[in-house]
Length: 199
Image 1 (cartoon, rainbow, N blue to C red):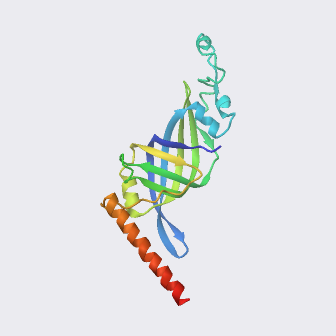
Image 2 (image 1 turned 90 degrees about the vertical axis):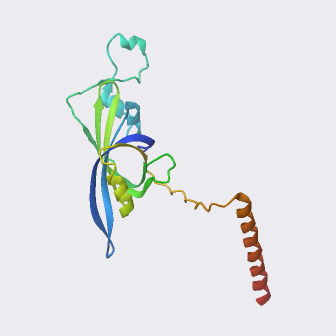
Image 3 (image 1 turned 180 degrees about the vertical axis):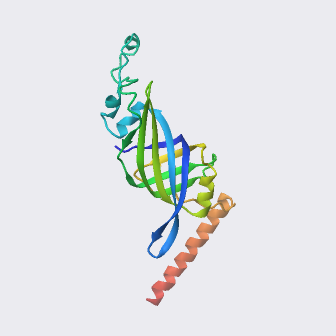
């Protein structure tokens, strides 16, 4: 299992601009640092035993109220500080959602996601920090830079995936489009008949 989440509030902590060599060409690249907060149940996405390694059950009358053995809310070692987690995703997909329509979203494909920090909090909360390394064009970089130190909606897909092809808005009605398709098929059919005659 890999760490993933969809359209969740995430804070953009840091933006670093750089270039990468792709053959003889230098292309723009970007490093991003994100912070994401979730319940400690999310720790299972890294390891099935990580939650019980970091948290334990409360030893108080509250234990009688919630007898669930997996309800672990007490940090075992509060002086431990943030934990470094050695996990790298080489071809992840990160979406920075901007607006409700999705047209302004920044989609970063083939990202490297690494440099994880896990900070546990009393009550069963976990704060994750991670770095995203990606290639981005100037327009995407400008959008991202304007979101620095803001909480934004982010999707993290560690296994990547092809972005949906955006269909252009022609401004035409359904009947007009259907008529154009019929005409195109008709032209294609004549072309095939003419090719058959030549052969």
